[in-house]
Image 1 (cartoon, rainbow, N blue to C red):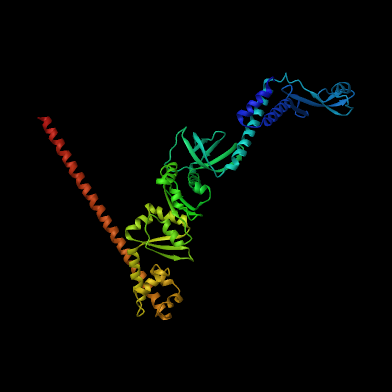
Image 2: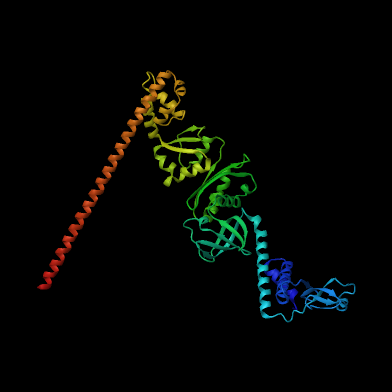
Length: 461
């Protein structure tokens, strides 16, 4: 075992673990090998001798006058040579010769050493990364396992599960990758570092790295919403009146936000100012769409947002993405309505309240402002609320509710008839297209037959 100390130091350096862990592993390995050789009931102690550079094994035996079992006992005279103060009945450690240990015992020792070193590596990795949960790390793609990507972080391997991968992002071995550390677990297979590229924290951490004002606490990200790979929104606020929070995040010529967009591989990012005024905040969250009016229902924490007709599709977004992200960002239920739709609704409400003499469009506008945004709402609203309108008593309120119910049913029938007519027109159009296609196919077949007949006639000639 010459040079064992040097080998221990080298392994400790390569594996990044304490040399004491390796010495402990060696001692345990030699102890188990010796017990297999001498018997499992044998009491054996292993110690690393730094001066000799070897693992010493000591077998404990009872000091007796006469030896009946050499593996368990030793004579007093022999024991006195090892320890002059020993007495009868004491136990003394007798050094064992390890030179005769066979190949199988050496293999056993090797397995124990490997296992203990792996355990020590696992503990080291866990201790190093357990406090790094919530950080962004850099790694290299090594391999793929059942959809998950195994990332080499240098001192450890991490896993990017399939559910934490952004759709449409593809990687190949040796690609560099940045991801957010979701959690660090210690299990029987080793420390598992779980990464994510889809979480909202990945977005906010990237801004923290790119925007010094966020890192220093001058600008704060109040809320964030994200659909990975598609679009994100963040709401920011400044603790310093001289610092524009949106401008700080955008950067000179958009350099800061573009750095984040580039890292997220083209994901669109909207940066909006946070406001304690809920209506203003929701309007900002729906950007880039312009908002005409907002009707707030604090009790239900919902808003009816009215936008110009040409802004409706922009406010809703592709497949509802813009309004969906605005809901996530603000925490408010948002219902988008066009100005023409609201004018139509106002007309229906005006017709309902007109059963009371002197009531009309002005009252309908008041009802809209109080959150009555459908005939059904009007039919089911409190009589007390209606009687607060000028010129409406309890009897008039009931008449309005009855009329609203009738109009709601009429409106529903009209919508069903319009939908049925549209479906019928669509079916007729599809049938006409199919008939035209069949006619074209028949004509093509006839032309082909004529051509073949002509070719046959030419061949016979």
